[in-house]
Structure formats: C-alpha cells, structure tokens
Image 1 (cartoon, rainbow, N blue to C red):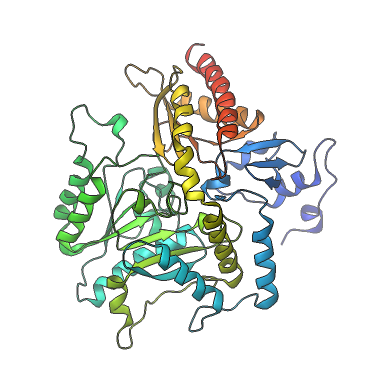
Image 2 (image 1 turned 90 degrees about the vertical axis):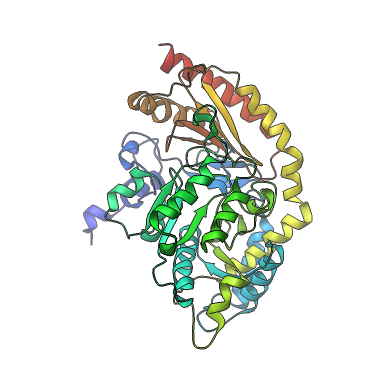
Length: 465
C-alpha cells in the first residue's frame, strides 16, 4: 500500500486538473503507452451527446469510432440509463449460476428471435473476450461429449484480433499482442486473411478459404475443433470477404466436422447494416460471439449464441457446460440490452446504416484520391483507409516512418481537430472509422473535411519532407 505521502492527491499544477494528476498516479489504461502522457494531457472525455463527445475543457469531438466500435445507438440515451435505474431498484443483481431472473430470460429469447437459423441458445458473458473464450471452450467440450477427444485446435486468420485472455490469444493472430505472454495454450493455427488489396495479382479470390481446408488436413481433421472468423476482419483494416468465401468455409467445416464460429463482437448489432454480419454475408455459423453493441456499451455485456445442434449434447443426462462467469447475464445489463434493442427496432437503425452506407463510402472514395490513401475497404459503418507511400507500387511505410506518421502526427492531430478515429498499424498503416449508427451526411461531411486536410498535411510532413 502506498504511504500517505506517495498516494495522497497533490494540488494540480497550474493549468492541469486534479483529475489529470489522479489519472497519472493511479489509472492504468488499456493498450496505452503510459509514458506518452508524461508531458501531455490524458484525453479526458466527460460527456456524450448523439455522435459527439466532450472533454473536460468542453471541447466537442465527433466520435468517429463509436468509442471502440460499440456505442451503436449514440451517446446520451437517457432511456438506457432509465432502464438500468429501474432494474437496479427491482433487482440489482442475481446470478445465472443455477438460477434465472426475468431480464436474462427475456433477453435470451429476444436474441434467439433475431439470430439466424437455429441459433437458439444464449450464454451470457461480461464482454467480448469472455464471449470468445467461452465459445472456444464450448467447442472443445462439444467434441469431447461426442467422443472426439482429440479435437482441441482452433484455426483463425493472420492479423485477426479475437481478444486478450489466454484462450483468446491462442486465436488472435497478432504477434506483438501474443509474444509477451508466450508460451500460450496449445492449439492455435493461423491461415491467410482476406486482404485483397495486397493479394498476389491473379490469385483466386477464394484461395484464403481453400487454405483453411489445407490447414485442417495438415493438422489432421480429427484434431481441429473450430474455425473462428470475423465477418469483416477488424485488425489490419476492415478486410471484407470475397463473394462465396463464407459459403466455401461452411462447406469445408461441414466436410470435416469442424464448428464455425462467427466472431461478431464488432460486426453484430447494425455495424454492417444487419443485426448479424453472418446475415449480411449469407452464411449460418454454429456459434456467434457478440458484445459491444448489444447494449450500445451502456453496460458491460457479451454472449455466445449456439445452434440447437451444438447445444444438444449439453442438455442430456447430468452433463453441463463446465464454465461460468459471475456477471454473465447481469440483470441491469440485460435490461439495458432489451431497451437498446427496442431502440434499434423503433428507429430502424440497421435500415438506416444500409440507407446511408453508399454516401459514407462515396465520401471515403473521394478521400481515396489523396496520394497517401492506397485503399478504401469495409462495409456498413465500418471502414478503413490504408495509407501508402506510393499508390502505384503500394509501397508501405517502414517502421520509423509509421511511428512518426501514426503516433507522432495523425493520432494527436485528428484529435486536436475534433475527430476521434483509429490510426493503427496492426498490419499496414490504416485509419479506421466506425461512427454511431445514427450518423448521417452531416457527420460524413465533417469527417471528410478533417481527414482530407490532416491526411494532406501528413503526406507533406512524412513523405515529401
């Protein structure tokens, strides 16, 4: 425990808030280089309204990332807070271990109603990594209950992000995130993603799907439990599937008795213009993982949605899914999720995304005319711009120039000019945009204005200097 002298809040230096000093002393932020704020303010968001958030100084920002791909219904929805308060008065918490409570039952039924095919069983978690972890465990136990004891391997795609718990890291295909925690649990196998911008010329578009079959055969089909894929791969910059990709993957999984997990922690709840990314790309997985937009992030919640076929072995005799999370199906979170889904239905937020997607893409296509933008890709309200040194050759930026471009200039400058989005290089350098589903032409115009000027300046500073 810190001594009083070390731990007690000190008076903030002139011009710096007490919150800033407390954050520096006590808050450990996620995926953050803490040293970066030694001489700079920590971005302190204090309020949200619609597509916008405000910092502690009252400055307004367009939230072009929906906080982290998750505030789908927009900020400042009082009705979601009211749903939480009402539920807390009635029943603040009870567990789903052995017991049920009305809100988790109602939410499970509603999610099953909206889910595709026979995905009718809903196992709640506290968030996305827990949903993926639960799905991977479920896949392993499913095969064991059916007498296939050797099936433990998971096939995922290179550069894909599936969460940060130890089981999830087995599937996550980003070396920098995995390496600090190795050795990881055994069983993670990785294949090509669907980055068509950097695919060899003339390559069959379905080659990444065929590689899944080759990897299953290489590992031995009797050892592979599942394949986990995002409908649109986030990490690397919104890789969309070629036509027929998921249909071919479904055929391969069926051929070898492998479960197909659709990781929709980001891609569900309207992000791609439908409740489910699987719906947009017309395939039926065995399991769906979801989180984020299920409550529009007003309360923590995630879930695994299982098909009747996958759930069946767990419903027999004295069997059970040997897994649980204290706050899975939390009454307050479930109440918020139910009210959030009602907003989706009342305002047709999925239809709104489909209606405005062409305008959003047209705006991004105009930005693609800039010399620093090599590719525009994505779907719905989930897009990326890949940044290049040379459009003709697709030459990318070396490590030091990436550092200068993304973290030395773009991230801070975009924020300074009032736009929150993601400048990232888990893969090639990209700018990602994922605004609230209530965004429209006014916000697209604002994004274009800020991004256009900042990317032009970035080109002059980093490439032409």
